[in-house]
Structures are given as C-alpha cells and as structure tokens.
Image (tube, rainbow, N blue to C red; front, side, top):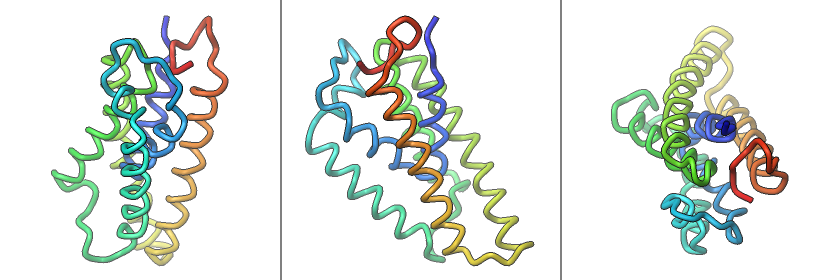
Length: 164
C-alpha cells in the first residue's frame, strides 16, 4: 500500500499558493531517481527549480494586491489544480498517476477552504488582506517545508514509495 499523504499535503499547499509546493520540492529532488515519473524528471532540472522559485515569489507578492482575480475563478482554480496534480505526481514517485489525482483534489479543496476562511476573517474580523496574505504564506511555506523534508529526506522504505 502506498502513502499518498505527501501528495495530498503538497496539493493542499498548491491550493493556498500554487507554486510553493513545487518550488520547495524542486529544491530537494535533484538527486532523486524517478524511473518513469515525468513530473519528477521535469522538477529535477536546475532551470525548473529556479523558475519555480521566481514564480512562487511573484505569486506571494502579487497575492496581496487588489487586482488579482479570486483564486476560485475558473482559470486560477484550474491552475491550482494542475499545480497540485503536478506536485502530487512528482512526490509520489512510481505512483505518480495516483499522486496527481490526490494532489489535484487537495488543491481544489484547499483553494475553496483558504478563500472562505480568508474572506470571512477579512469581512468579519476586519483583518487587512495583506496581513492575511502573509499568514497564509507562512502557513503554506511551513507545511511545504515539513512535507518535503519528510518525504524527500526521511522516507519510510517499507510504507512510503516517495522520492528517496
């Protein structure tokens, strides 16, 4: 049985910050072997890691501006689902198809959850959007860091067929 929790967790991160899970994972997988995992093969490229870091930083900055469309609009939602699927596939090694599905589901669910929570805190508790954005950034980075460290650095050989 495979453990798809890293795929779910990084999918959830993708729903909060679409590029963050990919950026964190791409930074750690340079020595990973991926057999026939196309997502992992792409993440292993040094150019990919750099591009994802730049895109992730840009996303974190622009998220706090008023002219960015809601993450639940069709195109941003599709983008988050694709990022969740990609990161889920990459972290799931030879179970990349299952990881992609789980990652996409996690991304879609957390997109709506994070949007609803953030909107409620802004409207009802009158917490400024920029503050909520920084809190969300911190949460997403913390979750991504922990999952990537567990999945990449300390894999459980007998349970988790993730990146070794």
